[in-house]
Amino acid sequence: MMLKVLKTTAMAALGTTLAAGLALANPYEPFEGTTLVVNFPAHPHYKAVLKVLPQFTAETGIEVEVDMLQYLKMRERQTLELTKSEGDYDLISYVVFSKADYVFADQLENLARFFMNPRLADPNYDAEDLIDGYVENIGVAGGKKGYLPGKTGSLFGIPFGSETSVLAYRKDIFDKHGLKVPETYDELLDIACRIPELEPGMGGMASRAASGHQASHAFLLHLAPLGGRVLDDNWQPIVNNEAGVKAAEALKTIIDCGVEGAETFGPSEAAASFAQGKSAMFLDSIAFAAGFEDPSKSRVVGNVGWALHPMGVRRGSQTGGFGIAIPKNAENKEAAFLLMQWLTSKKGDLAVAMAGGNPSRFSTYQNAELNAKYPYAATFGEALKYADPDWRPIIPVWGKINADLGTALSKMLTEGLSPQDALDGVAERASATLEEAGYYTWQ
Image (cartoon, rainbow, N blue to C red; front, side, top):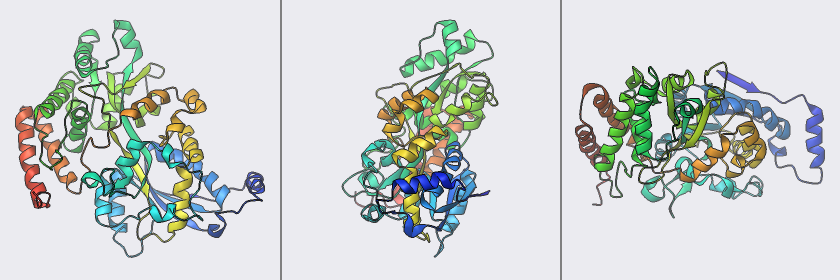
């Protein structure tokens, strides 16, 4: 759907803003009257952004049209738009694993020249306050392994709507049975399988598991904290080593101790199982938190507790979600940068967070007003200390490997394929994919 955010008619507020800055130059003045077209996903974070955009227009005189699409349709539209000589979008949101595709195809602007421009770059932006793991995961390309920070890395996007993994649990159920909130994987799996005995008809933990990307995502949630990686530093698949098998076994245990049909769950079905009181725990993204406290969607309002992603051999919560970037073929790149900068500034980040979005800054998570409105924010801020930007390899061939991984894991969950056999097959096929793509050229 196309939504248009027009100049606000609250001229008194605009006048106050302008009056306060009479003694200063107005960096937005050259762009007043410009209309930016942006492409955002139909996601809770970006629905919060819609509430804040009128404030940007009032302060800057820059109008914004939002083309909001369901994620897969957004990706399809971007695939078409980014190949045009002149694109329709001035600013886009992209999911993390699109970073490799877009940068490799030279379709995103390197942000260095905008941050170097004194007429555009706000000296009070404080980039050091941006959450490190999010910036590394969402925005940086060209460094270590091609997708992590390093001396050869560059910034192509800024996290906006990024997510990490946390554990939601039913406080009332845990209190009723004297259960300790799990801090380790052994404790997590033990409680997941005790719950159906303690509460007949209730699953231990709701999880993604559907064939393809969802099963892969669920497995990867466990792989990093249990000490595993998909690939080693020489691009050799190690997903089938001891840590990988343990992560696959953990996923199978969770599904086996879940509600009937759990092996078919995508993220919305898993979240609904928890929200409707059918599962006692939910390990996934912070993006679901607000929905669990919405009486129109949830039966567990007021009974949800939050904890860090449990520890295996180490802490290692996921990093994912969305960032924003300027397409190479955008018409209004400088104005788009001003919008990007404003949205991800301290003021903009807090405004979006207060409207229900996901913060991208440490200071936002520490804000007293935010914590008063959303008490779980403090736990989420703590979880971000352990956000792992390398929990999955963001390389151009990852989509193919990821799809194969998800299919193999689904066969493990539904057809009795052993975890070792499933992952051995993935490793063998991934090696062939990587060789074809040139990853072994220098070996």
